[in-house]
Structures are given as C-alpha cells and as structure tokens.
Amino acid sequence: QEQLVESGGGLVQAGGSLRLSCAASGRTFSSGVMGWFRQAPGKERELVAAITWSGGRTRYADFVKGRFTISRDNAKNTVYLQMNRLKPDDTAVYSCARTSRGTVYVSIEGYDYWGQGTQVTVSS
Image (tube, rainbow, N blue to C red):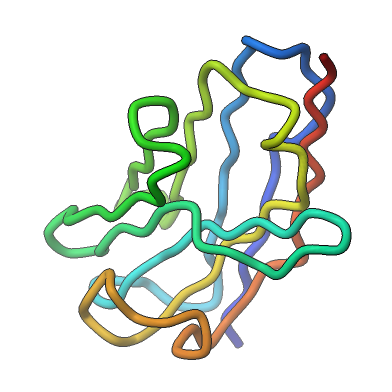
C-alpha cells in the first residue's frame, strides 16, 4: 500500500523559508510524477509544483516561480519543496500527491495518492 507522509510545515514570518518533505513508502518509485498542492481556507486546492521521478522535469505555478523549488531524492523516495520569501498569502495546508502518469501537466484529478497534508502559516 502506497503511503505519502508530509513534514516540515510550521509557522514562519513573512520573508522566511521552510522546506517541506514528502516521504513515499510502500513501493519504490521510478516513474510517474509527484506534485505539491495547497489549499487555503475557503479556496480550492491548487497545484504549487510538480516533478517527474525519472527525469526531473518540473512545473511551477506562476505565483511561486522564483521563490519555491521542487526536488526529489530517488534513493530516499522523497520529494522536497523549498519555499523561500514566503508571503502571508502562502498560508495553506500543503499536500503531496502522486500520479502514475508521466507528465507534469496532469490535472489534479489525475493524482492517485495523497498525503494528509502539513500546515504552513506565514505571519505578516
């Protein structure tokens, strides 16, 4: 059974940084795509960034370009989201998810497995 567990969330001041981790267990991943999503209260879940397991191809939402970096460690089955220059608008529950499809342009509905999420709160 595949399982995704996020960690690294917390409270940070505006302008600060956090690094989120998503550890995948249950199988060894060598294909597919991992994505980071976020959902703020009263808003829909939205893609933050995605990365392929095999080739490291990435995709970012416009609102995080230049501030966030997604990366992977295949040996550890872990995906990271380095978040810099955080803003209060980045406050949300951040979740990782996996799709077996090979493109970073998969819609949210195409992701098969989801973690429970980790809270990120950015104070002004």
